[in-house]
Amino acid sequence: MYRVTACLLALPLLVGSQGLSRPDSTTRAGLTSIYQLILEAHDSDGDKRLSKGEVETMIDLSLSGPQQASSRREMRVWLVQDYADQDSNRDGYVDLTELLKKPLETFACMDANNDGSLSQPEIRAGMARCASGPAYIAS
Image (tube, rainbow, N blue to C red; front, side, top):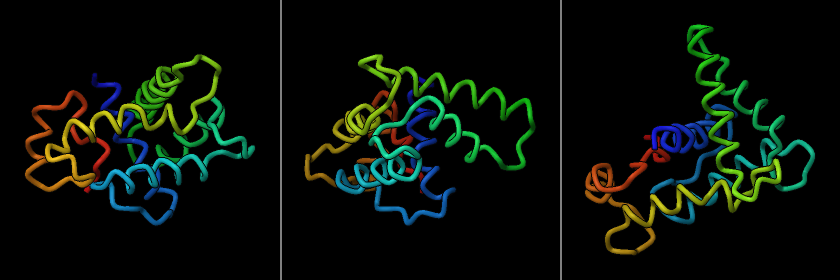
């Protein structure tokens, strides 16, 4: 569960770290757009999926901050494994459907009134109720 949470948190943060305009992650459409932007920004060969090398490059770019080298190495190993875990068909790539699986499951759990949008009360309640919490909603 913690790996899923870390991965869900890391992906949307990559949008901001790469200077991309960030859609509203409190709507289902916005959340989908965030992951589409991440895929497009880091899919260097244009095949609409992320290879292990593309994922590693994306992670390295996001971890280029002032954190300690040992923390950076640990986080990198953890995140690379998270992406491998998301590769549900084990083809060596992560596509948009695989990237969105857990975030959309978490979103559906949190969206108590099923209106496609998360209110602050739904987010607060969902933190306790939903397995991954709102990790993909970075304020």
